[in-house]
Length: 504
Ligand SMILES: Cc1cc2nc3c(=O)[nH]c(=O)nc-3n(C[C@H](O)[C@H](O)[C@H](O)COP(=O)(O)O)c2cc1C
Image (cartoon, rainbow, N blue to C red):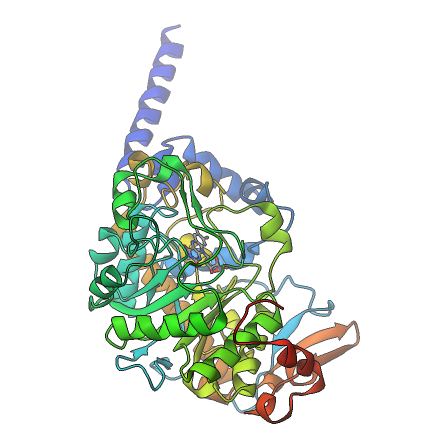
């Protein structure tokens, strides 16, 4: 009996020691929040990777993030090479598989990645954008510590951090990383008491030097046409202050903007924001729905005589803190099609040289960046990959305020597990390593600069015995072609599009 008691005491003391160590360490958020039992996750992962798959993806029908991709994000965030052993596990002859075309005459990758300059002729404060940036995610959807780490990483690595539609909080300001200030239909942080756009508040905040660009959010790929919702439990005093809304009351942004209701009014609103901000780049973000609506906006640019400085295209495969399943799965255009439509519409209307195009939707590797550049983007943004860089394990509790890793919760206890200095470095590491790989791929393709990429360099298997390049698979408009004579595939939509109405 005495021996058994001693053994039990020894085990108890060991577990207590392990628990204390877990709470004090700063590397692993799950162990910090779940001392001792948190080890089970790692133990099971070591026994068999499929167990990790089960734990992480038990709610998914599909596979939003391939296990290898997620593992590479984690490795790169921790400063590792992000290399994968043994070879691809993909079926490289499957229909739909895509590959980039390398060259027998590869180049050396440049030391400094290029930075497309955002800012058309009406902009007086252009911004040199990185090839990969932090996509829009609000303080509210994200914890204060997550916002701090993302912004700190952006400051260290010299890339941009989009605030999301929840406004600019104190946590966005602590580290001084470059901000893209997003304005959604709720006009959070720049609204009147009745929820309308307030020009004076806007001018005041937009003049802050940390704000490098302003993005009007028209829609988001995971829930196009639905306003954002922040559950009442997440509307703390701090969030209410950043947004200019009451504490503890469900915070809803309307589906549509009240500041404009026609394509012409949208472009005039953008011009007004640019003026109020002192000439900073102003653009919009959307998930493309109908090509007619897109062309209506393009026609409005020509009618008003100005254009947004950038357009960010979000794909229907994009992420969210909370959205109805039906919208996530069944509404909106996938990024590949939306991106090429926006690029071609601007080329065809003779506007591409003054509007930069960003792309978001599961961008997580260097290959994703290169692929999107070929399809018409100038730069890319990532949301969920950045969340993984700060410790997200896809527990999918974002909407419950019970995120186990402290990324998407307002609970002070849970977010304490997210150690800001450690995760700040991880954001910087992940972005840097991913852009470096994009540059290495371009060099392997014999390309020194993104503008030299072309659609022959991306191929897709169209059957089990044939592949075709993007140059063959899709229409690529010539500069001004819509204005001269729209090609057959575009003629109907171009005719139907009116700058006076979004109706189609
Ligand atoms: C937690 C979370 C919150 C988001 N909040 C916003 C937002 O406030 N505004 C917005 O335009 N997009 C928002 N998004 C969408 C992302 O900015 C991005 O467009 C989309 O997730 C696609 O990128 P990803 O596939 O890299 O996640 C959010 C996404 C996530 C995961």
